[in-house]
Image 1 (cartoon, helix red, strand yellow):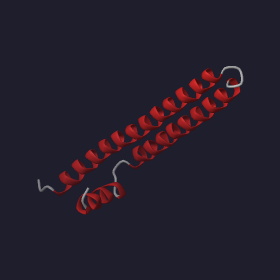
Image 2: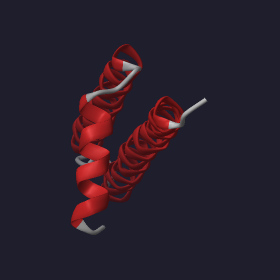
Image 3: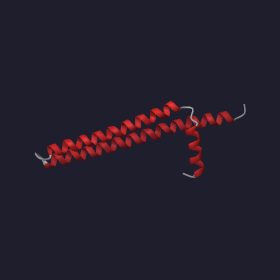
Image 4: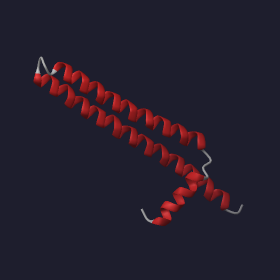
Amino acid sequence: MNNQKREYLNTIRSNTAYPTYRGIIGIIAVLGYLLAAFNALGALVGGLSVIGDSFLMGVGIISAGAVISALIFLGARFAKEAALILADIGDSITDANSRTPR
């Protein structure tokens, strides 16, 4: 992304008409990241507790937990970006319409 686009997005995001929406997007993203971390931790603990009885079962639990955690993390990032795009579109339209003479 070139500097002009980056500056425009920074201007729009700092002067947003939807600060509550943008804040909630951030909170939901952090909750998604925490869910991914707790899932990974749970899979690690569960896998290590089973690994003494069945090595393959333990490795499978750890591997499946890692994959699911990665999907949750990527899903949270994607949802955050998609929601921010919608807010950026709304702010851009509001900005453009406020400058257009009527």
